[in-house]
Length: 374
Image 1 (cartoon, rainbow, N blue to C red):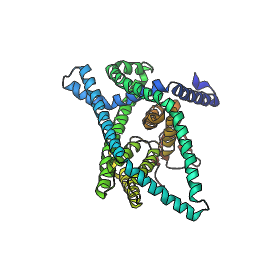
Image 2: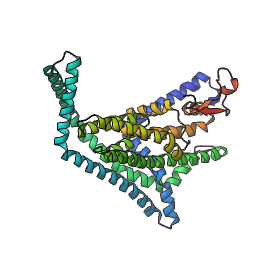
Image 3: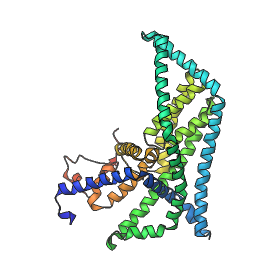
Image 4: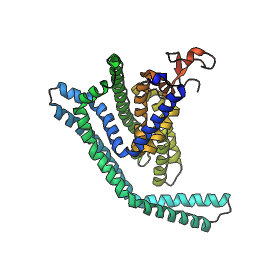
């Protein structure tokens, strides 16, 4: 019936549907985000679950063991950060002295190039410090609510993961019943491809965290940079957020280095090592581990990160790329939404659609990588 509607009406319905989905996610993010997180973790745990099932382990026990592996991994991360924070607390007097030294150096530099003297600078710093304190006091009231929300989020995850793995066959039957019998082969293919892409992507990210921590933390440790391992882990985790995370990781690495040294050469060293490790990661290691299965163009990867962050905070930023990849799989296999799959993808037409009519149609066309010619 919708095929008989005018083109403008079709596109208006699509855009209204998109706006409705975003609105639902904004309103119900506290419910939806744990479910989405549990969905992706469940898919990542499927190989472990299936391995345990082949070993004749009861289904419920196999699911519980899989969840315990995730809990162990999270516990190790929490232990590491608590240990590193303890080291920072012990070094606080030295950190304070280093920060004072850097502030004095910055003050001298500003005095040389501007007309502001030390008293004016101190007054400005004091005023901004008071503003930050007031802001911190106002945010403290909401901290308890945020913390309780995090605990609820973490508490619900294992329950959702268990139920999704236990009732996966019901969920699959529900998906198939949405479509005509003739479309079931395409649906089955989309499900298998979605599972494959999510598993390869998420497991690849875990491998990426491991080798980036070892490479970055190890090189910085050999050079003699303090808090080298902490810088490596923080950068490796933030690097999971496409494009934006690497920038934040660089800033945190510089700040940690400045607080642990009164000289500037360690900062330059940290930035250089991060750039070297990123080059290895982007051009050699990550393409071989994840491959080219997730073909999302950079524009919509960045937009996805910012939209995900605005909807659901940090968890939305982490889940943005997998969600966009799943949407692309669905769009590519749905005749009425193929154009959305093309928009999200990284496969540029080999020739301009303005000059060659064949490249304006829905049928497969010759493409080239979105990175070619850059």
